[in-house]
Image 1: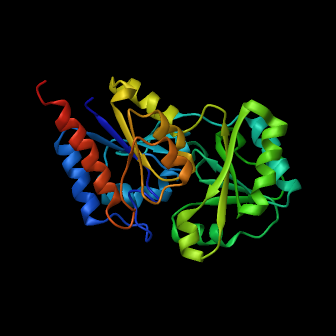
Image 2: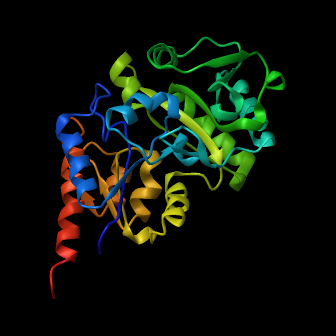
Length: 293
């Protein structure tokens, strides 16, 4: 099988623990592109949370953002695919978070809303949230109650940030109350944990069919690519579907064990050229596919 597309996660995969792309990884991207392999980032971040990364790697193609809820054209930032969260689910999820004393973080399609987040509730920012908003060029509005939300129709994700123990029962409650209409999970926030030295977890709730893999499938339709010709590399729980379903799913050395369990190959650590190793796995597979039988 020849792989025409490599989809890469950012945090914990392409980026090191400082949130930077190493020269080794930059060279790997160029080798892939020179060999005819399209490289597409796929991240839980919003576009303005990783624009500096896309600029650094000179990315000019599609970029899968917000865990698959948004696909942007990186050249001009326009949204080419958007899959939002229905307003009734935004309200219901936010009320559950409020009942558990959690600040609801609504990620929006900023190209429509004009800003990135609405924070619902009177609670103080978690240290990871305060750090994130301090270091990145994102904008937000604060409201005390979900009824005051200024742009609910542009919400693509509802989230919360807290320690693992606080989020586990909330995920169970959301899944029990809202059933298969919503996709919800919580997982470790690697970048935040490295920065603030706390066991921070993210809760993320999307429309039931939204994840990185379904976004990849939609991109493949536009490119005329068979999804089986796609390779994917990642480390976190929001990479699970793409690692499991891609033609070649590659787990980083630092990957969550649940990701490693469904991967077809393993690469190195994100702090030690792991993405470059994943690129070589893809390139080697493509070379092998061209050998005469």
